[in-house]
Image 1 (cartoon, helix red, strand yellow):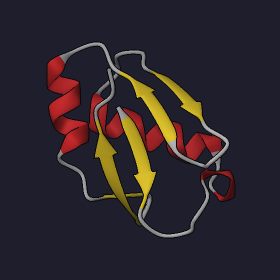
Image 2: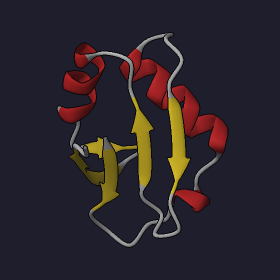
Image 3: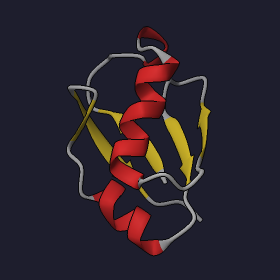
Image 4: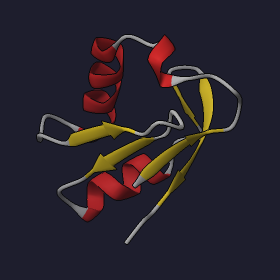
Length: 72
């Protein structure tokens, strides 16, 4: 899934520890892989459909409005 920021905030402005902690609170303790794109978007690799449903339901991440998109 791709997390795209709705405002001009950049992930680089946020602590990697905060990003990891927030994703764990949404996804649980299963290991996930996160890649930051040059645009500031995050690619989040998930292990299950349940994780995708949970992440797809969020409207904001670290107090920043986001669009969560699936990718092939």
